[in-house]
Length: 207
Image (cartoon, rainbow, N blue to C red; front, side):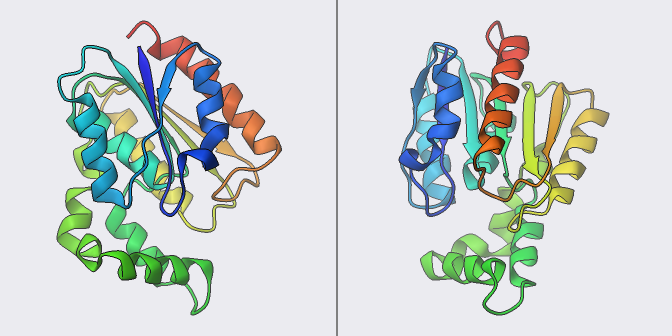
């Protein structure tokens, strides 16, 4: 079994060592691709999985977490999915960013997304690429990790996804990390590592 570790928007594999480390500690081969934006990342993940003989654990932070959840719902060969601070409803996410005060981190993130490729923030594309719209029974096991102080992604999105996935009979866990912002730091990283290692041992390695 292998693992994919996916970075967030404007980030890189070097900035998610806190995510890669717990996977490597489980003796998994970890592949951490680079990509420009959501569509590029989703395509690269699908290319990697296409025709693969191995099953994959897919873990991601922020945008990478969204790609992990979407892939788990739409592509075979996924043993389980892990999303840290990942939006689950991309249309709601864009509206949340846009509602931020001028100059706020939410508004600045929205403006940066618009500069890169405004086609990717159309309602049609956002609905088409929102994991919450692909929920169904018999998904691979899913771990959601989210901070209570996330300034970019509302935890309510994640709670709604969790409730709906659970109601369909899926194996899913939600870890709320008290005080954690969008990007984990210090003690948050230790909490995340422990949660990932426990979840993977319990649900993923023999999937």
